[in-house]
Length: 140
Image 1: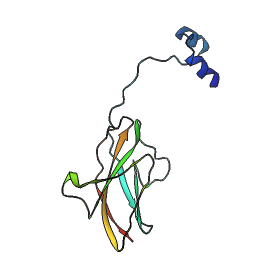
Image 2: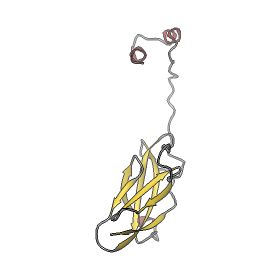
Image 3: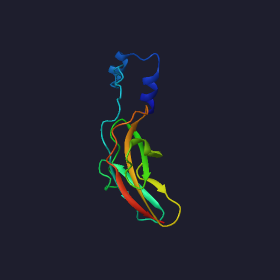
């Protein structure tokens, strides 16, 4: 593989030479990647005192074999204290996450209720559709 990589990047290499050597001939066309179209499913794990684990994927209950969709670099996670907000502008940024789960550490006393939503993001920063909001209470 190392030799093929070196040959592929050589300026003297032609497509005819690549065919003779039976190595891939680049098409020369780049395929543009648009914004993500899939909506992540979200599951919350509040089993640890003082933190909420926000799991997202195509099947958030599965912990392995659950890769991000093609062209997706990660996810944007937002939250709102007190449940689902009445207006879009009330959501607060939590994190950009490239691996599930994202952990939201909560301080204070008593119990607090939070709503979360997640959307996939590609490498250009283009966002896909938001997930349905999910709500849970963290015990402190």
